[in-house]
Image 1 (cartoon, rainbow, N blue to C red):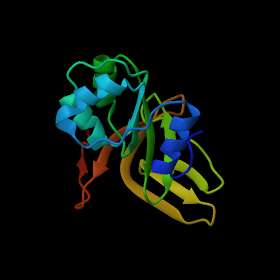
Image 2: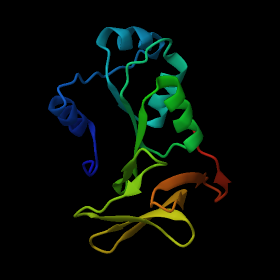
Image 3: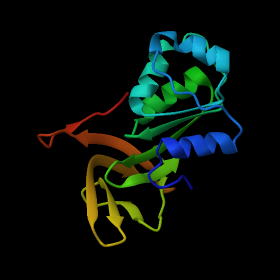
Length: 168
């Protein structure tokens, strides 16, 4: 299971454990140069990083795994990434208020329990997190649950309570 509240330090630890290189990058216009120089095998980033990857990669195809973290991405975007990069696309879904809620390569993954609480989809279809002290955090993300227990992102409520598609 992925670590609760994965942050930069967790990424560094995972990179070290897998004997990889952790690269911090902000020069998106020269992303292909960096990818071809360092030849990373996995990518870990938020939806805006995936957008930069899709828009700025010209020719790199060496990934074995791309992990989206934070906000959910829709199945169409995941399939687009899978086709372009020919690798598994994982999703570590969660919100700042609760930490990571699901992980997997189908949809946004399956929920998992930690000592801090557990994730579930409420009757209204919103992703929720129940903390160990009984406090419930309700996201604005609608999820569909398949027969295998994987969550699939539907839409996100905007500030006016209207459902809006959310994609990279």
